[in-house]
Amino acid sequence: MYQPVLISSGLVGWQFLQRTYDQQLETFSQSAQVKRDTDHFAEKIGSITTAEDLVSDRQVLTVALGAFGLSEDINNKFFIEKMLGEGTTANDALANRFTDSRYREFSEAFGLGPGEVRGSLSSGFADDIISRFRANSFEIEAGNQDESMRIALYAERTLPDVVNAEGSDASKWFNIMGQPPLRSLFETALGLPDAFGQVDIDQQLSVFQERAERILGVSDPAEFATEGALDKLITTYFARAQIEQIGSGASSASIALTLLSV
Figure (cartoon, helix red, strand yellow):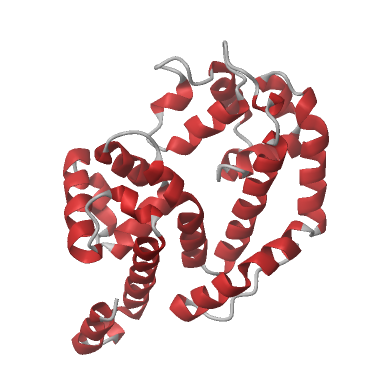
């Protein structure tokens, strides 16, 4: 499989990846394994009418889960079948019980629950899922070399949709906190410790809001849908990630200069 080209870590590597992203993604999408999986998905998805059908075809399931960043669940067939079969219309449906909204979006997109309309009946459904799968798969491959690149790519692609969704500011923050890649990016950018997730959830919300306004100048999470705020977030993330890597080897003066530059 095509391996993304990363010339270095940190901001320099990120800027290069941004410049070459479209070309690299296209090359990656044409690699043999990706093309086999996506061609198979496009051919078969129209004939899949139940959750059991979907989980029984590993190639289709690979693309379906990969499109939502849930590839690690590929072997949890019972769990995925139950989630798809229950759908999302009932408040107590399995997909609605997770803080990670990707599960709900996954189940809702395929529409295989009671009273739901199958997503595959919608025009462009297969193309949309395949596009998401390619992007997520590319991010995973980039992350195998440098996890910070995967997190930044994921945030750049998905955060605008998360913060533009319906709901209160608090619900948007909870959605950010519920998606591991986004949470990791914000915790690093906001200088939060590894154990922060053990704090009371409402207190976590307050800290996210306060630090985002103080460090990033953003009080409304919807602002992260704008290019300027998103760029500043990702730049701050890389700067602080580099500081963490330097650790005790850096002087307090150099760390201060790095922080002041973001």
